[in-house]
Amino acid sequence: MDAWQTQVVTTSATDVSTTPKLTVLLPAYNEEEAIRDVLEEVVEALTDDGPSYEILVVDDASTDRTAELAECFARTCWQCSVRVIRRPERRGAGAARKVGIRQARGEIVVMLDADGSYPPECIGELLPHFPAYDQVNGARTSEQGTLPWLRRPAKWFIRRLACYLTGHEIPDLNTGMKAFKRDVMLPWLWVVPDGFSCVTTMTLAFLCNGYAVKYVPTPYRPRIGRSKFHPIKDTLSYLSTVLRMVLYFRPLKVFLPLSGVVTAAGVGKSALSFLTTGSMQESDIVVITAGFMTCMLGLLAEVIVAHHRR
Image 1: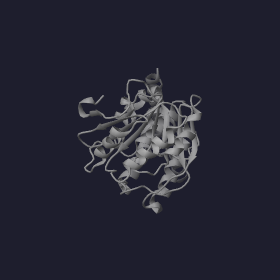
Image 2 (image 1 turned 180 degrees about the vertical axis):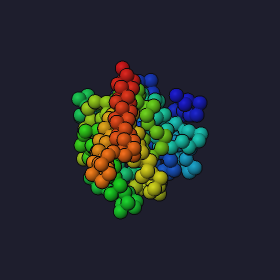
Image 3 (image 1 turned 135 degrees about the vertical axis):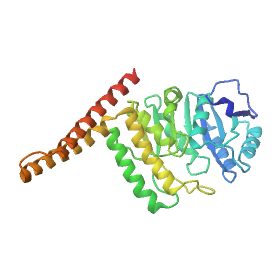
Image 4 (image 1 turned 60 degrees about the horizontal axis):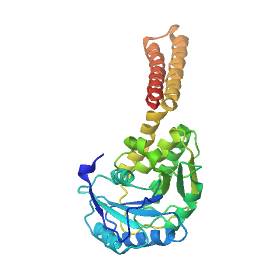
């Protein structure tokens, strides 16, 4: 736990001695235009006839007034406990979420972005699916992000790849609105990266390890303020996250098809060599051996993964 990097500031007008059932986690970086409105919407959505809850804001070393505005809201909020965690240096959205999950006191953690893109009133549509499900995600019904001409085809391709590799239909792979059981998520925080693709990793960690995951259609609004999305860097990170997660948990899904392709190429090349020269060539044997070794690597990786799960 990176507690040495984190300053925890509890500023709330309510009693924090009772343990809430729900923690609403808001990771934030330079969201001064939206943070207060989002906090007010969360309180309005959960105050009436809902479970006991707290709000936890993790400020990832913002250079604007995000943390100050959150603390000001916390001091005047009487409906629930509001805590603000200030990080002294920026580490990324994933690092902020990991700190928040560790510091959360609720049995269920609900995450949503602090930019106003996810309506907090939709939290009430996620909660009824517990405890039957371990994770419930808000599947966005529209695309409001920047550069949609690049994001849509990239997301479609990576989502289809993730569906194949995990064996599950995934309506929205990188939604930032998700609710999950905290005790189930804690053992898998080690696979969550510090950067942009953290929410994708959380979804894949649950799916690849047999946990029950559900998707609920959720409206998506244009974000308030400037987007932090980097087209090339974040898309490549997104793709590498999917492959890395499957190699962590289901390596044969990658190695077995690759072995089949290489072996088939070797057999085809050998047949062509035999027809043209009357014998196999050394290169044919090398390709076939490479296919066989790829299969062996996949089996070895699968054994290591199975042993790690124990």
